[in-house]
Image 1 (cartoon, rainbow, N blue to C red):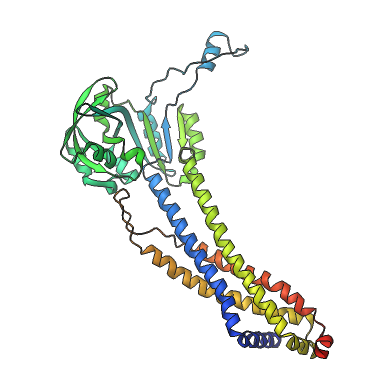
Image 2: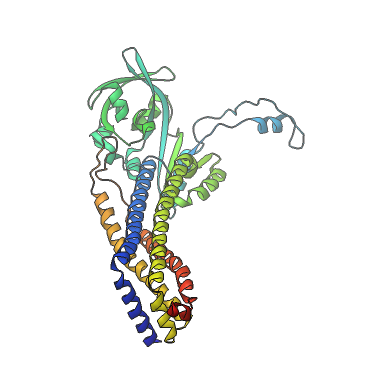
Length: 420
């Protein structure tokens, strides 16, 4: 067996060296296909990961709140009993307060689930108007536990002016989004009047400016302490409208959201449901990336097929002599397949190295944007999975490309070829 492999190897090397230009071009097709595949997949995966990180930088894994529900069931039970058939037209929304019932106790329960829950941030949201002269800009004032919020969402890393400490130490201090600051043309230290939906007005001091890179936050929201918003609304410390939860494993969110809905009698929405549209766009982008990359590798496989077919046509006499000297059809198939695999392995190895260099080059391209703090270079994901998939597909393409030429070579009649 060992001697046969040595003979096969010598014949394969001889045939490939006899057509060096075609051999190099064929291997180059695999090389470029794999290199571009790795570079594209690494870059697109990095972009998706970066966008997902931005999305989750301000989005909880699970959000607890009181959602609007129709009152049809309670009306039927109240007036007609559960066994009656009741037909209701145009039911109204149930009268439910925005505050979560027993919110402090729920927060305490969640914080004790340390194996699954990373952190919990209670918050109170109030609809307000930012007033500047006669101009009123609608927005949202969010009261949070700033220390816990910073732990969950790294708020301090999003601050472009001022600091988190300023917000904590300034009376009626707020931290506003960068887009909102641009609209109002305000900076740290300026004072701005706000008006609540109830008509209450208050003069707030801008203690920090933040940029999450998400328009729904940067152009609308302002953050302050939990007690400040509760005081503005005239509520006590038990008044909490939302509870944001971060998990150790975000993939547990759908399961735990269903459990929390039953336990706490409120709506629990997981991050996948909340960001379904964005996740679909990620999936479509990945499909397009893999489709283009696989097309490149497929074209490279056809290149190997063409080279081997031409090689067989030019080496008909050599193959006939091999068969005449005792080589079986199986031996001929092994030799041709060996040439194909050598092209795939050589092209795959060089392609992975070239793909790694291209990915590294992309990762060093400067890309700074004031709306995306923390981003200095193009995002690239150097996952080993991309390289394993690339070399596996290269070997598979090379093997399939060599099967048909190998079968054709094995069927050659040496007598007919030698007679001319």
